[in-house]
Length: 482
Ligand code: ADP
Ligand code: GLC
Image (cartoon, rainbow, N blue to C red; front, side):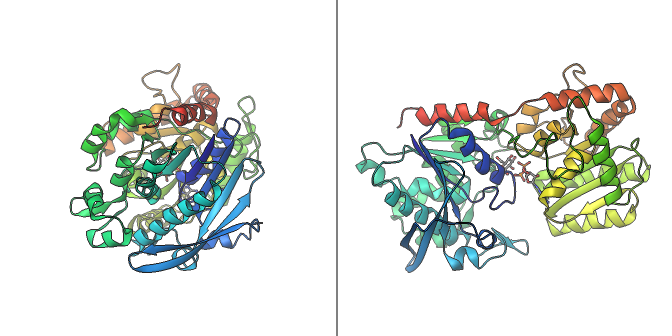
């Protein structure tokens, strides 16, 4: 079986969020059961700077966007795995000239539609070269940036004997790729396609992905249910309901070769379920790093997050300032995003300098150090398709406190409802009071050493490895095509 992945991020090359983690890890979980996986991502400036050992094989093409033609090249990178290749789709103007992936100064690039038309069509052109000998069986698209692969293969598939099964994975329904309808001409599609893309007077790439795919998946079973409701459906709930016979919820896995406190190279001291002393050392180093009072008895509450509406950071600001005012906790945050939120966290840091560590940057190793050094991880997301940080936290024995939604409710067992099985603390009405209550419940258990250690060890025993999810994807890959 030959599979092509289309995505806009992938570790270790480029990452803004969990999508990159999934695209870096899922193919590796699949390679033992498929013949070949080719992953296509854009060739961003950040990737060029890494001076990767690209193969001399490259593919040239021209793409027409509206009335203009753009030249492109796809570069190939061989990986450590014989049957896994990464292809970078390049155009200087669209990808290498920009410092950020999707936005500049908080605003989307004005030509994002053109950029991702170019990417999808350039990647597809490359698959044509690559499949002249052996066709692909599966085209696996991820999020709106790659949804157009579905529509651009729609016509050709009727002439093909065994066209690839198109799987569209929704990592976040709320980011839809919406553009003014005046940009329809950029797509160079027959006008009969317009109504498939039209969404409240605009164009929605997400809608196209849902329609022009044979199967849809999303990244947790609960989110698969939630997106069929008005509250979580971002206006697409009716369309999703109509397509629910092809919708599956598959919980993301965790790559324990990267996120494992037993051999994590980023943390000051490794540790395991049976020997937690390294965790205390990590906590102490975190306290030193931010010049906090070095005291193991004071709980550290941590956050690593995009600072976006989705993540519920206003709740954190409100409740944490109360707890800091009462001098009961320390608080550490690593995040970037919304400028207003960045400003507020900066002010919080100034207000409580000896109790807080605020890093408004993107920093991979610090993300690991916070996962290891904090006692509690806060994730009051308003919605969360899957969420990876909660699962990383569990493995690091850093107890998650989260809103009961999406993939968070599929992976955290609430301790207060079941103290023999609980692995974290969930709150279920989205308000300050309920969030604070969940934190209070956690702090109470933290006071009792023995109970806390039992909870930490149980959390660390949870297993979210990719094998499970990979099997489910394989089943779908093998499903009968339309
Ligand atoms: P989302 O994809 O919605 O942002 P996830 O929980 O699925 O949420 O994944 C977030 C990923 O991004 C995690 O791997 C997390 O460690 C990482 N991350 C988020 N913000 C930062 C940051 N400022 N520095 C380093 N890593 C970050
Ligand atoms: C999105 C979601 C997040 C999920 C990630 C990977 O960014 O917001 O919940 O974990 O994709 O699927």
